Length: 280
Ligand code: ACK
Image: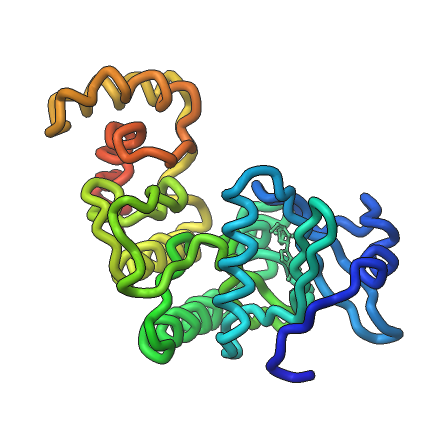
């Protein structure tokens, strides 16, 4: 039924994906796999299968179902159904035939399918989706993880914002909730002070715009050696020196680990001060 999110039968999804066959994999994310599934003669969908080990995955699954079931907009991904079966947590979405903006820009085609007109349209679609989340939802929804891999494209390159696992409603967020997001897209005031507002999404949208324009990521993943020099350079600028011993190791071990504010504070200094000409 249009506009409602159905509790779906596991057997149906298992059959539709050929028992979650590797051949049906559309892509892989940090949470697990996304499969193409055939539910009816003519109904193809995308099924996200979350590895529900640990409470984070479970929480993100619940969050996505709760938020997306009350959201409907042409530039927000439609959640058609969900399913819980033993350890498996499944989310069923409309199929977006052109995959993510990230893969279109940085995958094998290197953005070849994306004319300037199409890029403008993708930017506008994303802005409309974001505006809807901020202005038309009550309470407003802050996505917290807007990035090119979470912008999906249909066969006509209409863009839709996806992945609401980390999204929060305005007012419900407090500083005790762990810092979430993706290095390079996280707004400086959130990264450094934990101050989260809808403007944090606007910062991330700025980074997406730059990526559309430049055809590359304004801030790349950092190699451990780069990281070491940044940490050395950034240390004098950190305010809370008592936390310094905690900073160095985790940052070098895994630059993408945003689990704790101080683990990333050093990298953040670079992240929020990229080369001046690329500054969002
Ligand atoms: O860039 P991709 O091909 O597009 O690889 C990623 C991967 O799964 C992990 O997110 C793809 N993906 C996610 N949701 C959908 C969807 N609704 N339709 C089509 N592909 C999807 C995404």
